[in-house]
Length: 553
View 1 (spheres, rainbow, N blue to C red):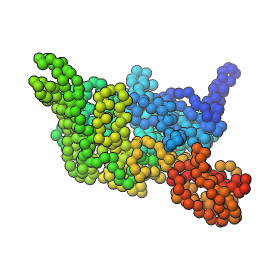
View 2 (view 1 turned 180 degrees about the horizontal axis):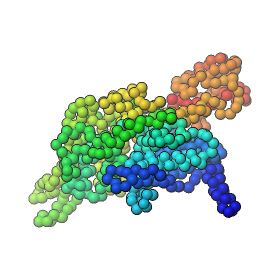
View 3 (view 1 turned 180 degrees about the vertical axis):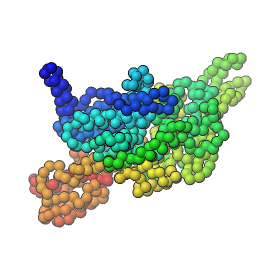
View 4 (view 1 turned 90 degrees about the vertical axis):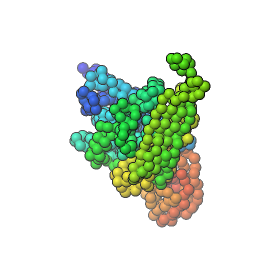
C-alpha cells in the first residue's frame, strides 16, 4: 500500500511541478453535465482534449490561462496549431511564449472533429461543430479539474477566440448560476459572434443546390452537412438558407428573404445567451478584428463571382458523350431595403452544335430597411482563398475567379455584443457594449488575427497586476505616470537626475529608442512606436535605476 501511495504522489507531483518550459501530454476531459440537442433522444456528455504548456519560470501549475477552441468541424486546428494561432508580428512572436515567460501556464482545450460520447460510447458527436452548450460543459469540467490541482490561489484567465468566446462566456456564466466557483478574474473574448456570425447567403444557396439539387456533386457534401448544417453553425449564423427554403430543402419559399436564422436553432440559442448575460464575477473584455470606423468588406450587392466552368464530358442516353459547363454567379446581399438575385446557376450541355440549358437555379436576398446586407459590413473577415488547398481543380478555379478575397464573417457590432444598433454599418459606440474594455482596430482584419496592437491590449489586461512595477527591485524614486502610453510617456521622479540614459527595447531585444536627458520631477518624452510590449530602462552611469514593462497602444 505504501508503494501505491508513493507512485500516486510521484505522478501527482510530476503533473504539478514540471520543468520550466515543458509540456504535458495530450489528455482527455469528459464533461459531467450532459446536454440534449435538437432531435437527440437523450442528453449526451461531451468531451475534449487538452494540453498544459507550463510556464518558463518555475514549471509550477499555478497561474492558468485557458485558451479555448472555436468552430472547427474538421479539427484542422489541433492543439499545436492552436498554439501557433497565437503567432503575430514580423519577425514572428507568440503570445503564448510571452505569457509563459511571465510565469503563466497555458491550458489549451481542443474539440475533436468527432468522438463517441462518454454517455454510452456509441453515439458520435461532431465536437468542433457541436452544440455550443455541450462544449461549454466540457470547459466547465476542465476548469474544475485545473482548479482542483493548481498550486496557490492565483485566479484564472480565459481566452475565447471566435466560437470559443461563446463557449467560454456560457461556461463561466453557467458556473456562476449554479454555485460553482470558476476562480476566474478575466475573460477575453476574441472576435466572437455575440450577436451572430455571417456567411454570404448566396454562397449557402449555391453549395446547397450543387450538393442536393440537380448537379448532385457529392464531393461538396461535407461542406454543407458538416459546415453549414452543423449544430453550431445553425446556432450562430444570422442568415441561414434553411430559414428560406421550401419543404424540398432547395428552392426558396414564398416569404420575404430578409435575414433569417435556421429554424429552431438560431433564435433559441440567442435568446438563451441573452437571458444568461455575461459572467458577473469576472472582468469581461473584447478584442475584435472588425473596423471601428465603418470600413466595409466590399460593397453591398457587389458581384462575388461570375464565371463559366468547364465541367467536362458527360455520357447522356441518346446523345452519347457531350461536353458540359456551369455558369455561376454569386452576389453579396444588397443595399438597405433592396432585393437582388444573389445566386444563379445554369448547367448546360453542348447538343446539336449549341449550348442548351439542362437545369438552372436562382435565389434572391432582401435587406432590411435599417441596414444594408451583412456580407460587406465592417467585421472580422473570412478569407475565401482558404477554401483552396490545392486538392480540387474546380475549387482552385472557383477561388482564382473571385472578385474579392474576403467577406464579413464576425460583424464588429457582434464582436462587441452591441444589441442596440440595427445598422450593421454603424460606427460602434463602445459605451453600448457590455464589455469593461474593448479593442477595435481602424481597419478590418482577417478573423482571429493577432497584431502588435491587440496583443498589447491583451497583455495589458493579463498582466494588469504587474504593469508599471519594476521587473527587478531597484528603487521607488521613479515611476511612469501612465502605462499603457501612446505618443508620449511621462516619468515622475522624486529627485533630479542628470545625464540619464533612457533606453526602450522591444521583445526581440532590438533597441528602439536610446536617448540622454535630465530627469526632473516630471519628464515627458515623445514616442513614435508601434503598438506592443517593450522594456523601458533608465540608467545613470553603469547603474540601472529604473526598469519596467511598457505597453504602447
